[in-house]
Image 1: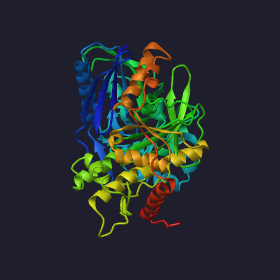
Image 2 (image 1 turned 90 degrees about the horizontal axis):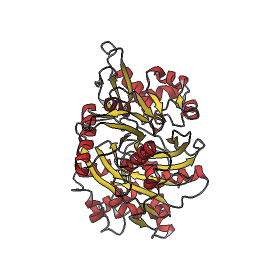
Image 3 (image 1 turned 30 degrees about the horizontal axis):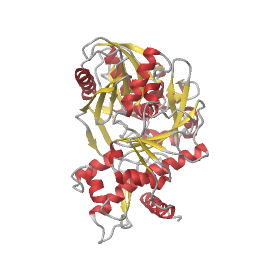
Image 4 (image 1 turned 180 degrees about the horizontal axis):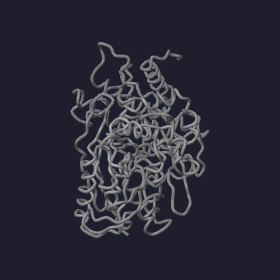
Length: 488
């Protein structure tokens, strides 16, 4: 029952070989080179993305040293590109989920009165973070209509990768499709009116398939393998951490931080500013939904600290930040690439608020850790408003779960336990669960979904008045960064 699972991410592609009896047999990371940051533009080289998939999968199989039954693929969600279905060749750069240039598209649609209708249809707010605005923008701006072949398409990056893996399939799974803004959330199919609003032809979009489907076969990693299972990254992490019942929630701290909460089998729209998406659609007819929100700059904020010389590496966040009793009244708003849920301000920028001549480097770093935790808490409170009940715990994964500063601040601000996932590959393991289900049937995924215990649990230790004081200071800083009046 051993399977290969690939998580094609923003900064790296991870490949895991998983055996239900022996666990993770190989875990390989391959960096993705060739990124470009310029103002609101964030682009990646599609060939580099593809090569990272091939290299990661090949190295993981070599490291495991034994055959696998099938391969499944996770993807980074809202990243899009133009490419040629006939040749599989990219026609544009891959426009990252972090790219903000499609704000011109969302501004136009908002002015035309589409905002409420599109939210009602798709469950997604009108924001350039999602795929359809970027697809529209790429189609109109980057794709050379005069020289583009008749077989040119603009899709999310998963369709490009799966096409190359299988030698021709043109598909996207239902979770990824639900991150575009043109999928009818209730029907699970492309909506003609939503597509028309963005200038997209639904006939040129990939076929929407269930997450545990067999999609074809590949020889990209050497042996001939069936490709079974596909899912967007955050929903895969949600699955791996066992969040299937309504109210169970997780946060992944990667390049960004992503809070998802299971909603069950009814696609209830958020009234608190969150997005509603498909958590999983399975071949047996079961469809589950989730509410989600995001902080765009988390690991990216730490890399920014490195670039400007405030830290030498992520470890300095704890080494220097925890040496301070508090942040000295400084608050940090990590909106370095705009604000997502529940504020939805793509033009927002990050801010340190409360600086003085007495501010130390350690206090700045403590403020960064608390600022990340505070913005995740903002999302968690929106989740609680939609659920009508507090979260009993937050399950977490990703690189910043290694920071005691961030995790303890998270527990204190939430007022609830934070349970750390024991593996560094939650997304890949969620994909492995789907692949096992696709090959062996319903229930085969439970060895992943039910078979873990936290590697650490952070309980709240700060008294509520202290924790609320930190959060209130951060919330005032958020309003100040948005030029909004302080109502506190």
